[in-house]
Length: 113
Image (cartoon, rainbow, N blue to C red; front, side, top):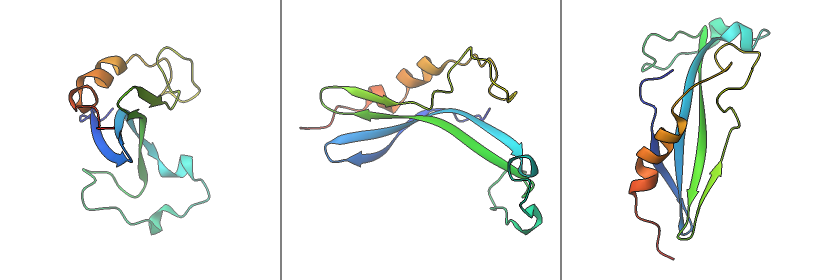
């Protein structure tokens, strides 16, 4: 799991605000995700903190749309306490609600109508 899991204001959509609530980052072997790909031909960005073209970092997150009247969650459905075939997602037990309510989402004023 990544070290900077948070929720942050991402965009404004009309009078609404869109927040990204990061749930998890996972590093996979590229060959397992894309067995037919020639990973040796993939360029790695400079800021990957030791990640090579043979590895892919996947970010899983929920989006929250905040209007004057409500907050609408657009959820990945990854959730906690669910059996999954991939070890990185199996029976997760994370403080998602804490992250949801502790960042910018709850501390930014509601948009004007």
